[in-house]
Structure formats: structure tokens, C-alpha cells
Amino acid sequence: MNIDKKITDDLVANDISFVTTVPCKQLAGVIDEIDARDEIFHIPSNKEDEGMGLCAGAFMGGKRPAIIMQNTAIGVTINTLATLIQYYRMPLPMLISYRGELREPVACQVEMAVHTKALLAEMKIPTYHFHHQSDVEEFDAILKYTFMCNKPVAILTDANFWGGYGDQ
Amino acid sequence: MIRSEILREIAPIIRDQLVVCNIGLPSQELHMIDDQPTNFYMLGTMGLSSSIGLGLALSQDKTVISIDGDGSVLTNLGTLPTIANNVADNYILLIIDNGSYGSTGDQPTYAGKKTSLTAVAKACGCENVIEVQDKDLGPVLQSAIDSKKMTVIVCKCDSGNIKLPVITMDPVVIRDRFMKAVAS
Image 1 (cartoon, one colour):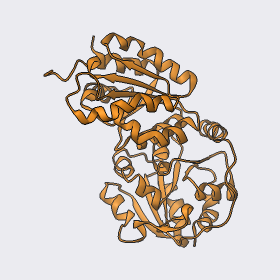
Image 2: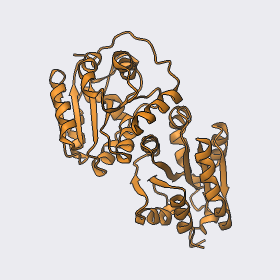
Image 3: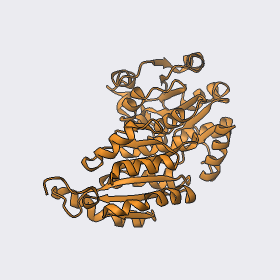
């Protein structure tokens, strides 16, 4: 299975046509796939809170948005999630590269990994963790759930899900 | 002129446009001067007026004006390259540049010192950047709307605030009312 294509196909099938990204090595393939698809307007952000602002605007303009980012961004976006996305009740699927988990080569990434689920739980953000490739089969249902309930929803995708870092 | 005087002057010009208004006193002032369903009031999240406005402009055809402040643009300076590289000709970023953090007690910003947001916007690649003095804003803003070209306006003005109440409208009501105006 090509995970990048499956994720992008699910986004398109759920009418998600506005996607902002802040890159991560693990997300490179899916970002390339999204960038290549005519059905999706891809707008890279310089910072994840900026990206959430873009998504809020797109949603109010009638588009279904999504953000793709690293889990370190949870540390950047708490205020935006609370006072914009949650306060105004907007849907926002967040496809998150979960760095600092099993097979992670960079020690510093673990420092935010240990806070990631606790922060999401504290924010009462529905959170799904993709660890095996087959977990991606739930992605379509998670997107439908997000736009049903008008909430930000986190999908954490770890190194094992993406197939490791190649040399490990 | 101070920001509330500017908003009073441009209210008839922006009344029929979609407006995303910056957190704090700017939204409170616009709400008091000329509340419209086409106004989206930010109740939190300093810095994102320009980003919300750009996302909105890129997603539908109506003209969008983001009213921002110099302090808020400084807090989200990454917005300017994103704006420059994703041109939406129905988008106007109006930066009310009074050189101070007005809502928090008029502490000076760097835009009131050495930093020129006009020069920063140009350096970021924004193509139509106009710096204007407060009293001259009206015609400049009207012509930017008429031009149908993405424009960044930096309006230099005095710092100063008026006393007025906070917005008590529920955020979901603000958002719902605004989305209906966008879709109408």
C-alpha cells in the first residue's frame, strides 16, 4: 500500500480542498502527493499557528481545510487551538508526524513526544495514533468524524507507521 | 488621527466587504461603530487576522479586508511571505500602524522605531504595498478595492484609545453570522 496516496485519496474523497503544511522528513511523501493533486490547493505555512489561521479562513470561505505538521507544533499552537479553532467551533483535521517515538534517531524529538498526548488530552482534542500501516484504514472515518463534530482532531503518525528512517 | 477615528472614516467603504478584524480594541471599535454580519471579530489569537483573511480570500471570490495592527503583524511576521507567494486579488491587508500595542496600554512596537513594515512587506515579495498617512486612507482603500489587485496598505497614524465595552456576542454566533454573509 502506498500510504501517501491513500491519505491523499481520502482527503480528496472527503472534499478537503485546502491543505496547509509545515514540513517534516516523515511527511515529505504525502506533502509531495498533495502538492501534485489538482483537487487540493496546497499552501505551505511558515508556522503552524499561521497555518491554522489560513484553515479557519478557508473553512469560513466554504472549503474543507486540513493541516499537516509535526508534533512539536502542538507546543506552538495551544493558544490558537483554544481561542480560534475550538472557541469558534471549527473542524480541523491535523495530520501530525509523531516524532520522538520508537525508531526515532534524534534525542531532542523525545522531549516533545512525551508531552504530545498529554497536551492533546488536556485540550480535549480527539486523538488517534497510527502505529501500523494498516491503521491508515481508519483515516477516512476520522475525517468524516472531524467534520461531523466541528472539532480539531489529531492523527499522530509515528516512525513505525511511515516505515522508519530507512537506515534503522 | 487615532485608530477609532480611522475606522469611523472608512466604515462606509468597508461596510459591503468581508472584514476580518484584529483582536482587542480594533474589533471592539468596529463593532461599536458599524456592526455588520460581514465583520468577523477576533476575540483571541493575536496575530492571525491576516492569515484568516488570506485563507478566506483564497477560498471564495468576494473581496476580503483584513484589518490588522503593526504589533499583530510583528507577532506573525511569517504571514507576509505567505501572502506574497499566494496572490489573491480579492485580498487587502490593511495594517493600522500606530507604532504601539494599543490594546495593552500603548507600549511601543518596533514598527514605531527602526522597523518599516512597508519595507518588510516589499522585501517579502508583496507587489502592491502602499504606505499612507491616516487622513489619506479613504481614497487609497477605495481604489485598492476597485483595483482587484492584492494590496497591502500600511496606514501610519497616532496611538491612542477610546473607552468602550468588550464584545459579548458568542464566538459561534459571530462565526455563523459571518459564514452566512460570506455564502449569501
